[in-house]
Image (cartoon, rainbow, N blue to C red; front, side, top):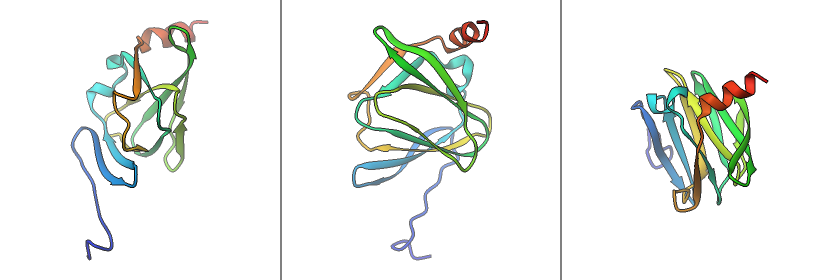
Amino acid sequence: MDKELIEVKGCSEEGYHPLVFFEGWRVALLNDTPRFHLDQINEMQRHNTSDEVFLLLEGSFTLYAADDKEDGPGDITAVELEQGKMYRIPKGIWHTHVTAPGTKVVIIENADVSSDNSDRAFVDLQTRLRKKNSR
């Protein structure tokens, strides 16, 4: 295969791996790691300069988004990703995600997304979800 015509990238290691960068955007592969299991999630983030797109390749991936309250993330909405569908989180929306063993997800966003232009807020996701489900 001519590497000048077709570039192939992949990664099987756990975690987040930016693999492709081009004209201001990046494509990353997120492979399941215990850090992204429900019992480990304790924050939500929002990117102030970029939308973020998720595409499930395999496994189970739940995306959580929250409206904005004065003191941080408000009411949480959850969606279980389906293979072959793209899910977009607009810039400025609080979000987090949960993976399960064997999960692989493609993430596309601006290449400059970092802690310098993103906010983080403490959220006890398990407790918030229990309270929501008990209503």
